[in-house]
Image (cartoon, rainbow, N blue to C red; front, top):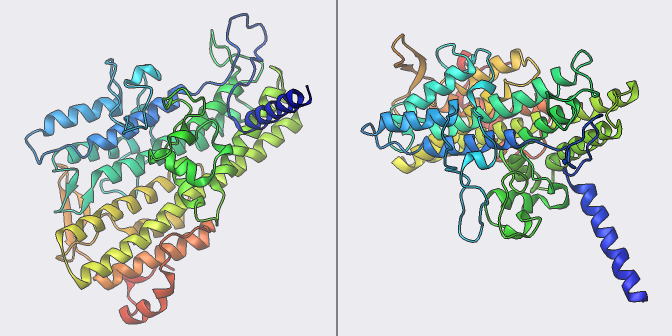
Length: 458
């Protein structure tokens, strides 16, 4: 009997701990709801957009250099603009023992697209003064014409550019500048109303859930280590992913996407705790909304919610800033290797890392805050394109959409720019993980290059 009591207590404790860590199974609080739903959490539309993004990135590398350009462009546009078809999930897909539950998009959510949710402002850091959706469409057309998504004539790696920019322009922007901003503002719909006619969740509940969906974390991520969360996206830890032990990974709740994945990658260093900080703030905020029990939030509840929003915004921004810092260091190291011994492979790696740097730098500018002078400096330092081996660089596009290239700064100056990016990111965003930190080289390189207008950013 004593052993049985101990077992029951143990099960109860484990269940309580698990429930505390899960972003799931919040009760129905909507007044007047008489349906059979028992869980008010819903963000499948956001997961569908993560899958659209992952699939789009994969398609961006499928061009053969021209002959299949029309077919690849048409396919990519379906994943960007949406389709009436039940699109196949191109990524993430089952890999060995890491089995994905869903195989088509409609098994997650119907009628979703990326284009309608993309940041509509002008992207000053990309040639042509295009809006967010126009930039991605332009990149899609160019990617379809390349072999494997890479254009050696410009140094553009389109899978990386499209992916890193879209993660910011869609997921980050929608969360921090819409769902956690306008839809949580005092003038927005109140918590005593359904999100829409026929819904089983309140307006505030669903808006908060949608923001969490864009963050991209698994529902049980707070109970896992940074490495486990990282390895889920790398498809290396089925046991950690498969929370309900049904033998498959449910993309709706058991897979880390986008910036949640990048947060875990930095947290593995032990220097940061971005993943848990953001996810816990989302969970705590959801508890406040559920605790209102379908009534309007009180002044104190609203204030507490705004505190959690501030934590989410600040740390999500830092995750993107850490990514800029990391890839600026990668580009710096790539240039050193190219200076020592050129190879096509080394140049391709350099272009890939610059694409990641540029994509994240553009994404950083799509949040709630106007970065002002910091954005100007960041855009000038990264350039419109990487410096090429003949010392040229993309500087714009003509009226026909063709790239314009001009003579660029020296390799030494461009290397210095990468270090100035790292310095800028530390000063403005206070990053801590600092992957690929090359700032120790800055004084020596600056003295070697000498002062010039192109090398200055302060």
